[in-house]
Image 1: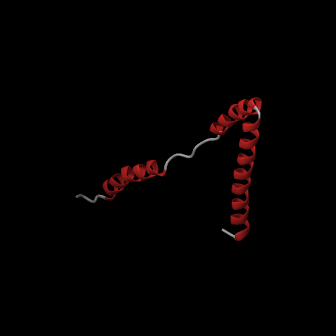
Image 2: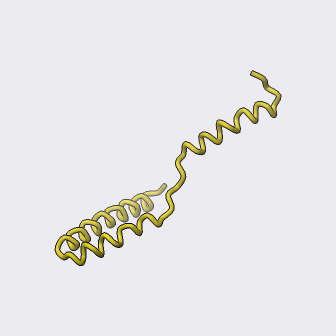
Image 3: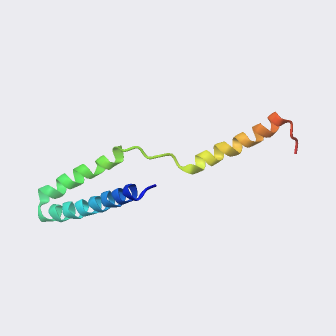
Length: 75
């Protein structure tokens, strides 16, 4: 990756941290703001979570014996 991509990623991470801190301070000042903040935070769960890498490893282990059988190799 180039430095521009890395710098942009770091900038976005710091921006989210800064905005999160500001929203937390704002929500602590007002009870209605706290309710709004708590209502919007679960929207993060709508984004898809990528599957764990160990599932790919398990698939590779299952395919490996099949390849040996196809080649005619015996244990």
